[in-house]
Length: 55
Image (tube, rainbow, N blue to C red):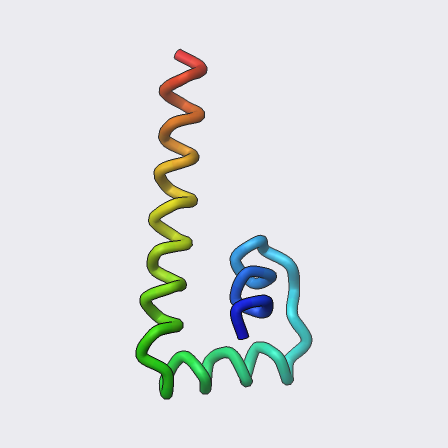
C-alpha cells in the first residue's frame, strides 16, 4: 500500500483497481492516512524551501 500511495503522490496515474484499493485501505487503516498527510506536509515544505532558496 505504501508503494501505491507514493506512486499516487508522485502524480502517476494508477489503474482504477489500484485507486479503489487505496481509497478503501485509507478508510480502514489508521496509519496510512497519517503517512499520506506526512508526505503532503514534506512535499509542501520542500516546495517552500525551493522557493526560499531561489530568492
